[in-house]
Length: 221
Image (cartoon, rainbow, N blue to C red):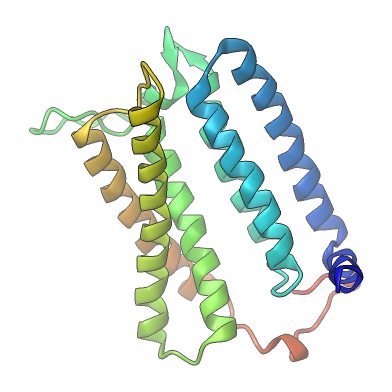
């Protein structure tokens, strides 16, 4: 059984997927060394999550063959999170940088790099949900849209749970308070909706796996 799984993994690891894997492993190792040297335990936990996702992606590849370009977008989510915590900007971290300030009566800060990353992350999650739903279900298009949005928003909510666990277990963790969580959940929903709209607009429907065509390099389209 193990040999069969390894053979399937080898068959599915196209050049594009290997490049994505190598890129992800490289920045994960660099980030792990950096956060270990600075004593940042919070983002060491994020490193553990990325390692888990790498293992999960390998399992998914043996059955579903997620497109290389989508894996690349997913890899960038992890990179942006780690850069947000590591790169200094104006005496603070990149997460708190406000590239597009918007005045509003709430007194909350918009739009921070952190909020952009959250939006992008759930946008990619919605594309991933769409991919699986179109391939493995016979839902009406409205059902696919609803579950893509809800599934991606749920993935975003898991990130908030990870932040909550970090807040409860790691001293001096700066992950924001109630308003930060509320804003993150809101931009997560926005990203989920945007990703679903993009999927329906630009991504052609997927045929069953057996009928998928391949390009000249053998990579599934």
